[in-house]
Image (cartoon, rainbow, N blue to C red; front, side, top):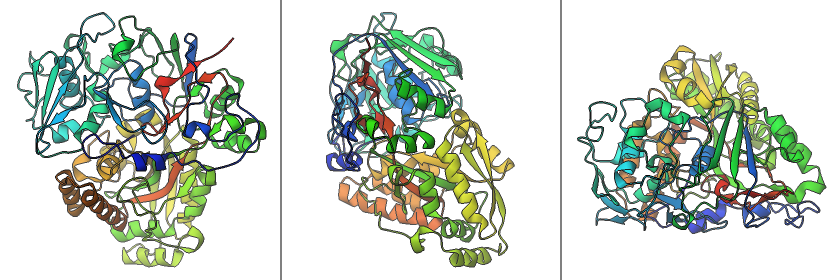
Length: 581
């Protein structure tokens, strides 16, 4: 998922690293791109103020949820902004300033007290829902409360608010007044919110960019069914109900005021999403112009990847940015309990073959540590499990297997998202490399939309089905060590379902360092703590890094205002328009 650093100051230098281009020279292709490969990583391509038309998306999987309070996929944090405004936002421009925080519904950036335990936010007056009623601070308070304090109704979104708000147990779906006793957020008037935190949290404004800060009218909330037709606060509203696995269509919201919105250009008249389309079909239809954007945002599939790179005529329509994400394999600690057995996997893994499965040089760079290079505290030169040519150290792996009492190897399963072809190929490459030391792994495919809610992120499912490994990917919620890795490595983040600390890392020393970082104001001192955490995660052999991710993305000549937004690790959907005859 995403983004940032101390208070609300962006990591400009780090953000620019996220935008590194591969420097590939090319000729031909792309009307405004002048044949330049990767132009969308650093500037707006095909700039236009033309409005109208239908912007068409397609995706192989589905939304985890269209409810802004219950989603954690990066593409949906990006897309949901069409109908769900947030308190703060990321700067809508390419380049090193792209990860700066700006107000969205807020009238100005939040004000902290001296020790960063209280934050005050003023919102704009006159903001409206799709029915013309005014948005109030209480609606935002309720949106946050329902997403985090709901008795287990929702399990897919991040839990920063439930972790940091100074709030006793609460369930908005119990009792006549859902906000009675919910005192950690004060609303002294219709346009002010005051957040009270348990402890100092200097990075808190970054949390206010997240979809959970979208307003929700109490009377309109239908719990789990709210995702069928979310009440819009943005420039578009649902046209009919969302049909999981089939479609989502949006039409203009006449009560949205562009003068209040610095983020959304709202150029198309209509937004249409086709769901459950095969990736190869998506890629072909992108090239033919039948659809405009792959909603997943992760780039073309392997077959199209090779085809495009060999075609000089389309080089100017391709972008190949570093996403800021890590692609990795969780080693599930409750299933593979002995650290030596987990270390055997780390040593036996053929990183070169997994890198090639992910797409080679256009797919990313081989990763040997947890934190991506743009994150302060990252040490990408660190490698606790080295091997010649990254092919694996089988002798070391066999030593570790003997140490954990499994000299002949063992059997387990690896979970993958069925619609993510690169995930599947990565798992197959790992399967082959582990077989060399007697570790037998069966690849099990599950739907991406429910992958964390019902399968790899469900503790019961993992234990009942011997899921010892799972292929995953993670990007920063903001670009610091805490914004990147706390939700996948802190023991407090472990959940029974919707679990993104999928390896179930619960190490007291790691947890203590995370807690210490929250109270550390100096960014260099925090970076040192993050480096220590990175090393400990690798020593625990709970995460097997695969690649620091790059995506190969195709953009058509008809798509306007295209640029890569590192905050979402894909194109900025809010800028896009279409220019068709």
